[in-house]
View 1 (cartoon, rainbow, N blue to C red):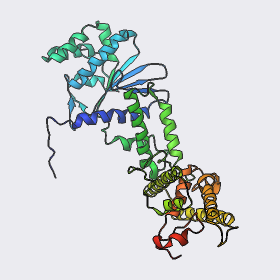
View 2: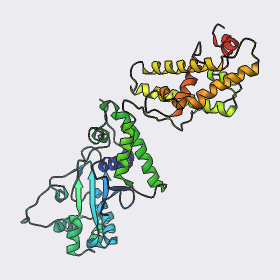
View 3: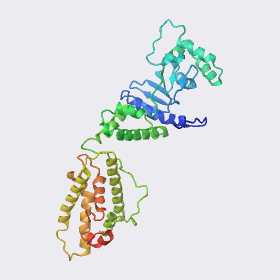
View 4: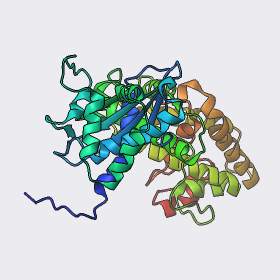
Amino acid sequence: MAETTTDKYSAGEQGLGYIYQGRLALYQMLQLPESTIVFLEKDDDVDFEDGNGSKSLASLKHKAEGERLTDLSTDFWKSVRIWLARYKRDDRAKSNLRFFLFTTGKVSTDSFLKRFLPGVVWNSDDDKTLRELAEDALAKSKSASIGTIAREFNELTKTEKEDFLARIQIFDRSPRIGDLPKLVKEGPMRIIRPANRDAVFERLEGWWNDQVIRLLTGARTEGIPGDEISEKIISLSEEYKSDNLPITFLGKQPAEGIDTDNDPRPFVRQLREIGISKDRIHSAILDFYRAFEQRSEWARENLLVSGELDRYEDRLVDEWRRYKDVVFEELDENSAEDTLKRAGKDLYRWADLESGKIHSLRIRERVTEPYVTRGSFHILANATPTPRIYWHPRFLERVGKALGVAA
């Protein structure tokens, strides 16, 4: 087993801490009432505001395995300094603030910080009050930074100190960053089929991270309410029901770009053969890309029933054939090229603009995104060695040799 090396200059835990803020904030929001609103990096690492306007400021600490909090732990006292500033700013005892420290570390059994753990009951005849214990701990320190905090703490009256300390809770042994996805999936996401939870969580966290970035950059000025998170989970879960499939490639572009002039694929050559404009070919390439990638993702995530894609393509081919027979009905071997192209354009126009409106051509009842149908037609037109559909009445005859198909 490889040994774990410790580099004093490593920023690993610090980096995890930043990611931890967002992930733990999401987990906590899923436990709180939907009226709760969350902010990140506002008054503390994470701020929770309930429906009555009360605020809970949370410091989050993702520590190395085995770390403990003692009387003079920097994590605790640095958080206290932040909380003291907010407490004084908001008129001290009249403020509506609470203060939380979420840490993956454990409070030492011999530390007075145990008094801040939830559910801990202390007898009224204990030797010292929480205020006195905090004062004693601060007085023992020779650290300049702790000394600064002590001076700021001692600016409070005895009553204010007691009020301030009573607002603090420490949640030690909080879930580590790698444990949170499982907790979310086995808790708030239990309404989602087990087979789909990984995919839904991945998309939920992607959406969540985007909202966090918008908050931090100022693109989003309002906090994120709990009901917005609930609505997102419901919306995502709806996409994984038996009559639906998730749409995740809307607006996506191929990384290699689009070259309408030099794209050699058969479905593009087919469009050139009937004189389709570059702009429409560009749209067709996008539809092909999005449909191909979307179908591949559905297959990877095992969202398709066995044979479902084949049956869907068979339906498309059958409907295309029926419409083709109508459009080409008046053509014969003597039809002029302009007439042939016009017929091909009419057929393609149906597939491009009309087929998406046909209820029976959806892969599933609630999958209404047009690129699925349009792109699937292009996939069929791209099949080799023989395309399953075509637009120009003479396409197979003219390019059969290039495609390796007998005319």
